[in-house]
Image 1 (tube, rainbow over the protein chains, first blue to last red):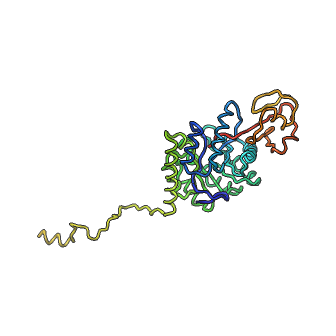
Image 2 (cartoon, rainbow over the protein chains, first blue to last red):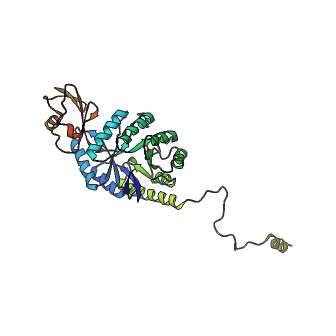
Length: 267
Length: 65
């Protein structure tokens, strides 16, 4: 169990609800993930109104905590308005703030993000900002009122894993009291284990599960990976050594003799 | 009156925001509305008058990552 934004959660994995072949497959994968929190968006309803309604019903049946996002927003005004719309629809003050600055990499716009977060924190939101792993931007987000940060591992939807391990390590080392959740870019369970071993509080995943050949099995694999990484962090890994060191005791090694004894015998 | 509803130009009668949503068949609780980029909370729908060429966004839950 752990605590995030005043809520006790069982799982350290937050999951997205997009990209599944069907709502029922999504539901099955979310259950297998063991997650307590699922991300959703707000969109215009068009010709897909029926399927959107079905999706929402499936999701509500799971009774998970909803983390709405501001996906697709590019300005402070869009993100603030979307956050307020989401608060009304979903009845939660939690908001995953995405303010995209570049269409190709989907990297966040740090300047718009900081100003957006400042407003939303002032309006009483619990802000989960999708950000880069840049330490100074992270500090500006903390100054703006954030208690949680969600740095990316790699660009959204790539599954490339951790592109800048040192930067993620630095964030963890410098922002010890902050809740840090790696969001975006994780592709394999081993990636999740790696960030959890660094002491990250959680991970947020979507594509890595939804785009797997077997999303339900992959959700389960990630669930175990996140638990393993956290346990390893809590257990305190050994300090790496530069030279070999036998783990089996040397004392009592068979066939070994003192150099002197060997020399006497050879005479 | 001509409004831009979810990005599409639409001719509708002179209506308040609450009346427009009824007119469009939005009756459940799972949506929220912005007018000209500003969120209009549900309690203010009835008193929100609309005028020509205003932009209305009606947003509902959707899959997200």
